[in-house]
Image (cartoon, rainbow, N blue to C red):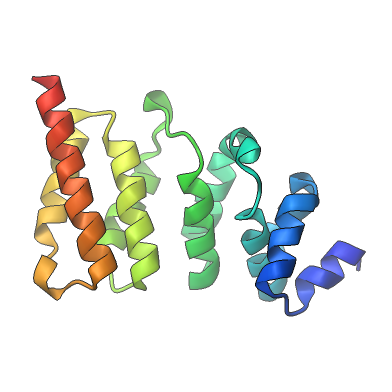
Length: 173
């Protein structure tokens, strides 16, 4: 096992994850994201979330692979980290993936942990904002979520996204 592989296969703390994200080449961390060892895979995802902003274009180039892995993984931790990485990528109008958009809509309304649901809301908006009909569906889905029953973080992002939808709708008229 390589030096990086040995580090990722063990328990790492926040300092190590940050250091790996800031100093390791993203390409060196990338293969471990798909490792069969859950710990190494989760740790690689964690380290990748600490990449500098300059790496956002690099992440966008790998958006499809990140999406595939986010939809495939059984690890809630890894899913949350991958959704965080996907928030850093650009969702272009002509490259929206309907399967991922549906996945985000389903996560929004699921019983997944709050962090995953918050990220799903933000990613669904990022994709829906390109199309008025998708934006209307997003708006309807958000309104289906009972705000009174939500934790504060999800209630807050729901409100922000509803305001963002309204502002886009007014911009189009």
